[in-house]
Length: 110
Length: 113
Picture (cartoon, rainbow over the protein chains, first blue to last red):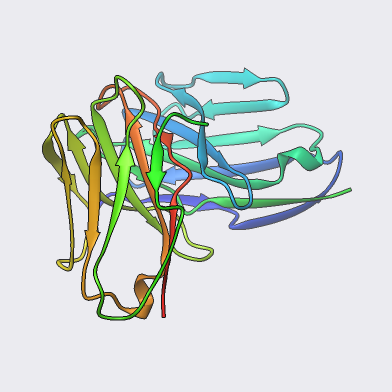
């Protein structure tokens, strides 16, 4: 069945360093979404990418959708302690099913 | 407050018991989704309802069932509970099926002892 793999599983960075998480699908996606879950919280929708090669920015966060629409990345520039949490990608197949990746947990050392 | 309400927030019950988790979607949202999140695990999709009808099933056990009522609230029933069912259960809603992001509730933490 369709799988969405996300790496790395965990990442520890020093405050101010950059961070990137990668998402890969076994099949072509119609769109991809990104969510953030703070420790003890619930997932919060961040953004959706639809077009091949699309790049979107939210302040220090840059989201990319691959040309083949099978991979995506989230890059955080100059991490802050408020960036701590688990970042999930979720890929939507052509059948409409949304499959979540396993998430990347980011720890930021002040 | 995300607009998606889940009750109860915490639930402790014994093995073999049955519980019902409740979810009220965000106003105007027709789709409701249930997810299970075990410790340090990702979000496992259980089931989706759209405007009262079951739309998709994920890795939902036969001991689990759900429904969406005419007022669009949804209930997830978990029966013959086992220790391994202990997890966070999230409900999410969206206005449309295919193009919208999901709004998650704050979850119900189920502990089976």
